[in-house]
Each structure stands twice: as structure tokens, then as C-alpha cells.
Image 1: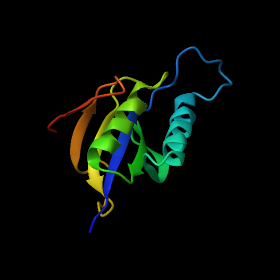
Image 2: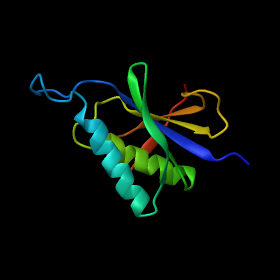
Image 3: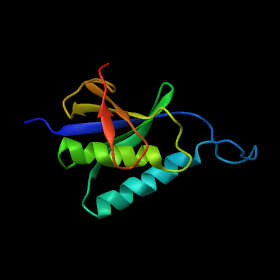
Image 4: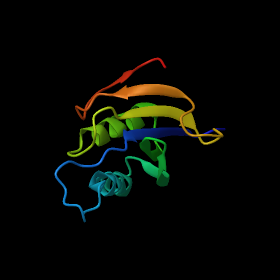
Length: 118
């Protein structure tokens, strides 16, 4: 049986106001730390390392029911420094490529998400 995977797609935009020698995407580490804490608390599992894919950076989570995964994804969208426009793709571990599945708009409130047709 396939395992549900939620891909969290975050627009790959440089953080504003950084010095030239600073890493332009500090929010990636912030999200990784957050997901690590969620994993330590048993709320999700990080399925794979995050990955740059076109104009987004993707994080992968599994381990609980779809609603729980989407709630965590919504909390990711609410983190300081995360670009507007983050969305989730509900897929499974048998998908051959990223971005296949059902798109879900993440409402950065930390509590809600909204299903959106592609």
C-alpha cells in the first residue's frame, strides 16, 4: 500500500535585506529545523531531504493522516521569512516525479488549509 506524502513547495526567493556574503535562503534551514522538531515530537516524519526543483524548494513529510500533514505544511507556510505562495502537493511514495498529485493551497495561519483544484 502506498504511503501518503505531502510535498511542501516554497517559492525559491532570496530573503530581503541580507548582506552580499550571507546565504540568500536562510528560511530553508528554519523550515528544516521546524520539521525536525515536528519529527522529534512524533507529529510527522521527514520523508527525504529537501530539494530545489525549478523555482521552488520542496520539503517532504509523511507519517500521519493527510489532515495532520497539511496542518504541519500550513504551519511551515506561516514561519517568518517564508515566501508567500507556498503550496502543498498530496501524493504518495510511488509517484515517479515531484509535483504530481492534488494541489492544496496553504493558508499561512498555522491552523487551516484549503483544498484547491489544479
